[in-house]
Amino acid sequence: MEWKDFATQGARAAQWAADYHAGLRDRPVRAQTRPGEIAGKIPDQPPDAAEDIEAILGDLDEIILPGMTHWQHPRFFAYFPANAAPVSVLAEYYVSTMAAQCMLWQTSPAATELETRVIDWMRQAVGLPDQFSGSIQDSASTATLCAVLTMREKALGWAGNREGLAGQKQVRIYASDQVHSSIDRAIWVAGIGEANLVRIPVTGAARAMDIDALRAAIAADRAAGHLPAGVIACVGGTSVGATDDLRAVLTLARDEGLYSHVDAAWAGAAMICPEFRDVWEGVEMADSVVLNPHKWLGAQFDCSTHFLADPADLVRTLAIQPEYLKTAGADGIINYSEWTVPLGRRFRALKLWFLIRAHGLDGLREMIRNHVHWSESLARRLADAPGIEIVTQPMLSLFSFRMAEGDEKTEALLHKINNDGRIYLTQTRVDGAYVIRFQAGAFTTTEADIDTAFEVITELAREV
Ligand SMILES: *Cc1c(COP(=O)(O)O)cnc(C)c1O
Image 1: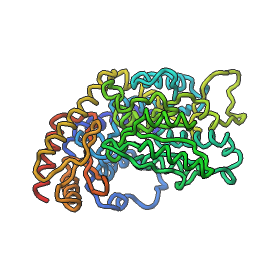
Image 2: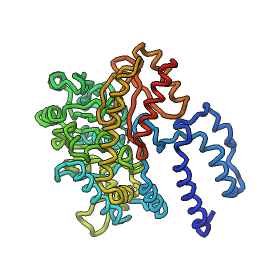
Image 3: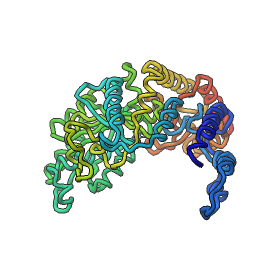
Image 4: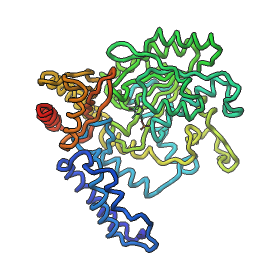
């Protein structure tokens, strides 16, 4: 295919996109395929001869589409949302048409300067003070890795990058037992080792880090000759929304001279609504904060906003300037590749710019308020349904429930729900018990979809 054919094929793709979305409600949310079924339909050798675009597009509909789980489905209540607002999809189309590498200011000044602006728009939108700057990372996992590397290097006086970790004191990092697995992986990849991720037990309904336990762990490590380096707090943990008391954790981190990172990957989006900001009260004391517009807000993956109270520590940790990357004569400019691990960078700011302008913060706030409100009302209705109990109360739009009869029945209910296809839910464990998570967050969800969720859950619960 060549560019001269693009106007025709592009228009076809746009029609396909519109039809796909118009028909989503009629498709099962989760793919109803068996393992290997799709692979079995793909030739095991690549073609030597060029194939016609008609054949390729035909296979998209016949082979691929039936094997997709529909994350944009209005009744997707599993995991967390991965919304792609139409205007954001449109922005990505323009981005991939220009396909610029935006690693340095001069490799696309507009990409860098727009990124600086929209990061500041987002900072204002979620109410962070104006000393925060930041960048758009591909994912929260990368932002967390950057923060962990900064913790390590700062604590080691920047000796880790130079000399390696052998012979250094043990770098220690603290987090609750509710944090996302991306924290574990950042610790592994940073060479710190899982054994040096100190898990602090949680207390209370919010499942917040026990501050006395955190203080004691730091003191014990210092006494043992280890090197406390950083604290990672979470707001809206992935399992059931665990949320640390940021004011307490960050005050302690500051007193102890530890670098702090806040993982609000999912819940951070709701901070555009001032009435929800009490969940991260104290966040302005953090060194590093991540939240993902690619989850709830509708900037399609990948788009993770990483805020920094002072980028100097991160840049000192990660900037490499070989001669071929130096930007002649342009001092004071930002090269965002120095704020992250990969060199190559996509132009991610454009979709956030399109999104915020096309919906306005008010439009996005209304969506989030609706989701929270609907989720709370569903939890109340389910609490009254026979045989069902709410296990964790809504944290924003996330709650969990189970069958009163226990794990086996709860697991049977989940399988029934997902094989039925009208809604899609996933599971987790709370204090050892198997529970079903519910979150409302899809861009196109309506109140009627929440009613459908209630009907499906109660109808199938009667059958297990
Ligand atoms: C989704 C999530 C992550 C991981 O986000 P990615 O952008 O996929 O790396 C990390 N932490 C929390 C709390 C999350 O909800």
